[in-house]
Length: 616
Image (cartoon, rainbow, N blue to C red):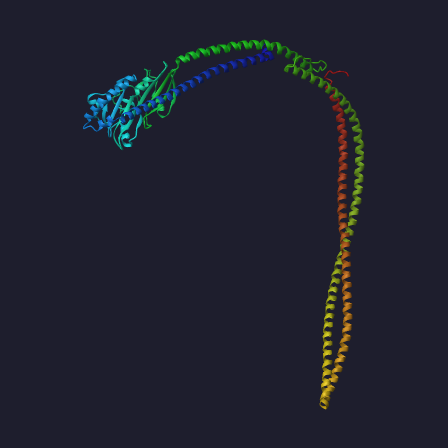
């Protein structure tokens, strides 16, 4: 019973809701605590930053004010007169007589303590000339070169200087101006305020405090300080209020490098580097903020918020429990019973759930699934009947297909044998065509050789004709010479008779040569004409033989292609025979499959019989 309770949907749902609420409450509480701490740190840092900026502004303002006062005294004619006095005592007397009334009047008007209004004149390079707040031997005359570097820097540069410098009494805020007479510097004057006074004048709350520490190396210059309180490598200088031992040497060492924040005993300790007029770090300024009261107040607020979160969590759990039980658990139980009936095979009972929420949608989807499942089962019955009928038809068709495949295989084998015989005949015709082509090629070569001989004969006959023409020309010229010789012999009379006889014989020979050359020329021309006709006939025979050769080659090529086609037909017929055998095997398998299909049909009918459905 307990196990069923733990596994029930209501228990899981309530536990999930409770877990979410508890985790949300824890997250809210942690958020409050973390945000409160973060807000505290932000406020503390903001407060420290504001203090540091205000402190630097006050320090800058005091330094500028000191320099203004010093610059004012540096321009007074009476001051220059005192520097040109016969001796220092006479000069101090001039300053005392003329400046002390002015200082008294100034401090009275500005409500300033006369003892804290310090004007100090120096002679070059760094010798005290007159201190307004001292009397007797302490008024001046002492050498300051060993530790008063501000005076030396003013002397070297002849330019004013302002800022912090450590002296015998500690940290001092100074403003030093050179006293110039024309282009030469005759001395310097400074107005100074103790750093202690600046700390005392700070406006601090009850939970705030400020303390200054010097490094031990710097504190050796302030030998009159006599600080007994030392923390590590630091000496305590001044604080606005007394404070407990909450500052460690580690804080001061880190604060010497850069501003830093430390937490100790409900105190936020901010450390800042303290630098002199040259930018050299001489110590550390600590700003202490005691936030214990704020912590108490903040703790009360946190407790109130946490209690409120817990109460809200309890109320929300009760409301969600009542709402969940009423709107979810009952409807889930109804949905469970409906789904269980479907699982048992009852598809007749509809699932009717009202509403438009997710549970109602799920119930409607389940009802749609039930209806679709019922339709599917009905279709399965119908399809199963069709499959049973188709299985019978398929079995008959398989037997018929097997017979046809066997017959097709036998016919394919007979066609393949005929194609092989046809291929053999094609091969014989192709070989005969190749032999004819070879004989024709040889005849073409012989005819071309005869043609070549005929062409050479034609060329020789043409040469003979040319030579006979030359002989004919020579006979003609010989005849003319014989005529000329006969004429000359007639002129010679009896002395030329013998020469006339010779000329007459030469003439007869020339005429006979001409007649013979003409006959030979006629025969040569006839032979040349016959040679040309024979050459043309041989060329015509070569062209006709070439045409016959092309036709024989085309016949041979066609026989080769027919042979290839016959080979392909033979291969395809072989493949067709193999396919016919495979079809016969497939037909046998198809027959076996149809038998198995009828068995599966009966198994499917038995399986869907589990579901109850409408008879329609």
